[in-house]
Image 1 (cartoon, helix red, strand yellow):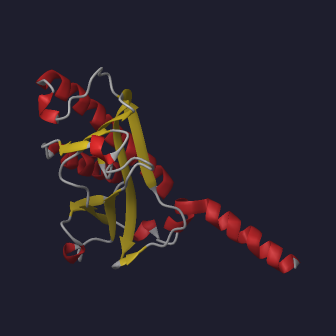
Image 2 (cartoon, rainbow, N blue to C red):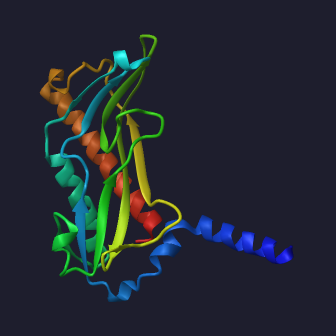
Length: 203
């Protein structure tokens, strides 16, 4: 019985250690180059979420610079750690890098259609509630074509209240000044989410 209890305690400690201990299975001293694969959607979401699905509306923010900014934030973090970084379209082009970091979109728990990043306005029975920007991502580490096993996801999830009284149904209904203001907030969320995920990854 005591052996079983000890085994359970050890398993629990390993579970709590999460990403940080898992990355130690890779000898980072032998890693010089890292390939980045960004699997995020090309464009952020712009969502109005009502009480039922019949009250929902969605569109995209047609601006590719947000995805590029996300890739660049991951790249800058790795470069600060001394790694040479290469942008990859897929693992097929990863033969000349020592390790891969995949940037994967996630969804905000309990909020439909929030995969990746964007803006959402939530209302209940017609009463306006949350107006937020959000980023939800995870960093997936691979070496030699194999995913590094981890017990806990290395995720970064950030939401920020938006300085806006009313969110129109479509992104293009906002004036250019407000688009720029909200875009700056979303990019700050991206930076924070990347930093959070890397800290959980132990890098």
